[in-house]
Image 1 (cartoon, one colour):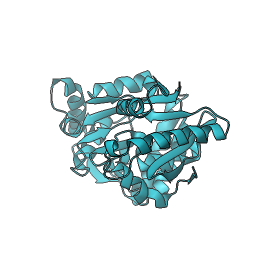
Image 2: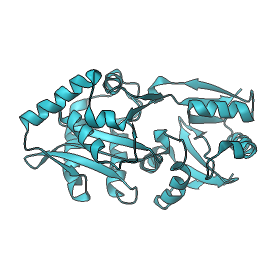
Image 3: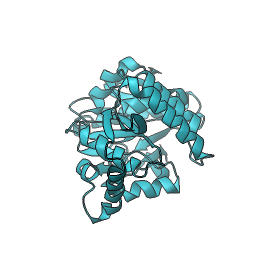
Length: 305
């Protein structure tokens, strides 16, 4: 297998494989692949017609599940899929490491068993689970279970009746960065597996390469001051990934408002919203659960038995 570093010019290639697939894992969002490349040394190859990603995690090579070429019918590619998996195992062994594949969702486990029964074993870590929501639920905050979220949004609207939502465009990036630095300064030491410096490095890459990444975002302004912002990118044909959301907590309800207003404005084809992982942080987990996810997308680590 011949891998090369992923680059911004690979957006069309990657999205040709992801956009028609039943793949809602945030790890396959091109924005994430590129903005976190500095940390994971992400590479790719098209091998036997399938798209394969290799990266480094905890000092060793790891892989994402291979993606079948269009028209994405796994049943038509079963034998090739098995061959690619065996080539991935050999690739890891060639550099002196045991095989490890991350980000495998539950459907992938059935595929592995069907093409190579007994070859692999799977374990899961709850902190890697993606939270996926129905778009309409986030856009309306309707129903008893989301009453508290509606209350937060309603209070913001009462307190700041002249607030404004705008698409996040490059001219607003300096104001967003100001808010990010203020937000980070208030957080203190985090116990998450990713630290604040890494997150800011990733954000810088997104802001610098906004158009190349196909980024979409929004801001909330009060008296021409950005008090909340968010951005993300598409994963596949029906799932949009919210990669970042920050708000000034002195403006109560700012998080509820930016979440609701942004989701209302993304293209209508995206009926599902992936709000990514909780990083093992209990407060973040409670917050994500409070929005009533439709799917908890558990992701598995695959090793050889």
